[in-house]
Length: 164
Ligand SMILES: [Zn+2]
Image 1 (tube, helix red, strand yellow):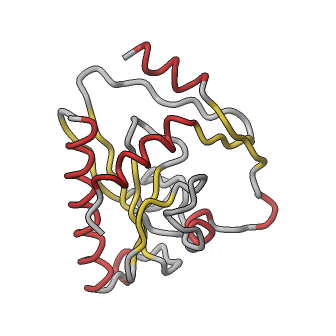
Image 2 (cartoon, helix red, strand yellow; image 1 turned 45 degrees about the horizontal axis):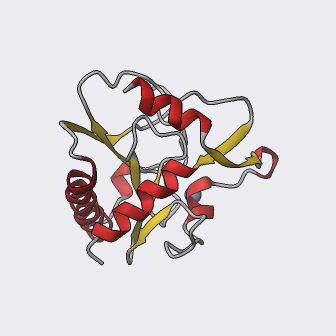
């Protein structure tokens, strides 16, 4: 595990300043990208929801599924959004098992600041593969966001196993 984490920390290929002044939404911005873009973290786009890698992964393979609709209101999720999110999460769950053989998963929604939501205004489901002893957190350094090479490599592996 230690070796994996030091590799992650060293292999930063890109960094860019946070667009904090613009009040842009990372999910709404990401929804405009295409999975075929090799620099995008977006994995899949459905009719109502899409999947993307987490820029600040708790673990290798940590991904998220979000509705295109910008909402923080869980109760407003429609049956179509929820069902497509379920199918996308199940697809991701299977693909992660195939590429990374995790021993367990965490899955869910963090709602509101006290619920631990990093982005409060746009609902998103987390899917985090787990291995015994993986209690480290990726460090978040200052105002600079980075996309590690390993993150994009994991995305490519997931794409190979993803059912369209
Ligand atoms: Zn949004």
